[in-house]
Length: 153
Length: 314
Image (cartoon, rainbow over all chains, first blue to last red; front, side):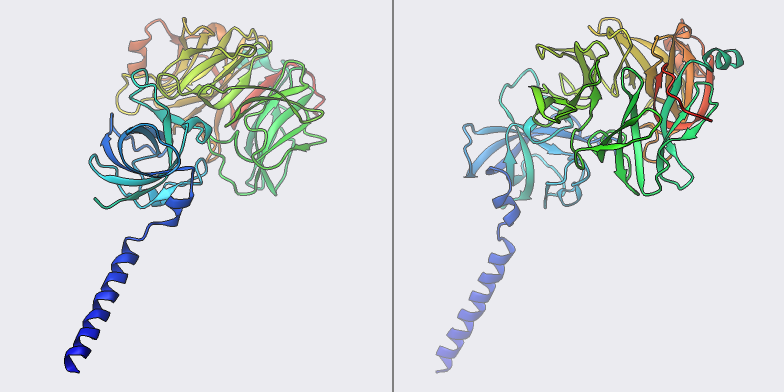
């Protein structure tokens, strides 16, 4: 009886831990509902410096390698994604110009994995300055990142 | 300077935005020498800014913002409601709702406006308020203005780089670069051939200062109009005959719309290129520039000029 009770107790503890872990890694509904495209992708390259100038807003185009497509149609493995005011944490980046934006990424670092809700092309969804160091080199459409969460590797 | 003030005193009217007695932004009229200044909106419950005389000088287009709204120097054309009133501020009519008809600017006959929306450049008939024509915006993202002859638009765009002043053919939609790199807020000379714009050139120490520049529409002959180390020059606007230029000089970048504007200045175009103050660095870059002869008026933001006698009274 004591063995059975211990087993039940251990199962409950495991279940509880499992649930806790599940809650911690639950996918943010913002990233699963915003925009028409949702991917998990690895940040491969940030060309140029990220400018941190409170006077001026801009989007910086970054290169990603697609790991998984969750929603929408994505034809290529490499995506070029514009992030608004990338020197700002995603949680506080929304402002008067861009209100529908967010996420939990605090800093953009090459190699990080991001789960992103996006739209394409960027010009249909964002009106502002764009730093695109791939201009003239790459003709692919630029995606617009609406929600950017860090993803587990 | 006194001579300049006398010269312009009877040449029409300047409309501009400034803080009124209640502390909110109001619209004002004054003679180009600063006399006969009067508040023409005087609304304690709203903020107003961005006045533009219609081509015949009889009406004024502007934006009205909620009380307490911060007028963003880059976004103001997207903010608030479009308003059209008689030139002396009477009979104001709200055109559309909040954020509708962004960056509205007059057509040559004053019957239409051009607006810059995410969908494209929209030509709107003012009587029916219907979109009568639409062009792709081709990367233009703010500060759209229709040329006095109706043949062109100018604006700020993402071309090869952001903050590029461009010109667009209003019929074909063809786009050409006028000035690249940290250039914005373009507007037209009365001849529709040249464009005036602030620019913060590369190669300055640190952040640098914004100067007032001009270029032909092809972007082949850009040259400085006025510069002054220590000040950012915005709000460039020509008198209707192109003989005089208005601008604001602000110690902070952006033109001062977030605070109380900056002193409005008048200068003869024949004085350009001109430099004020010691500006040792700038004078080395522009050794041909003359000493600026500038008449400084009151603090304000986004001035515009008409030669029409619009009946404002003292």
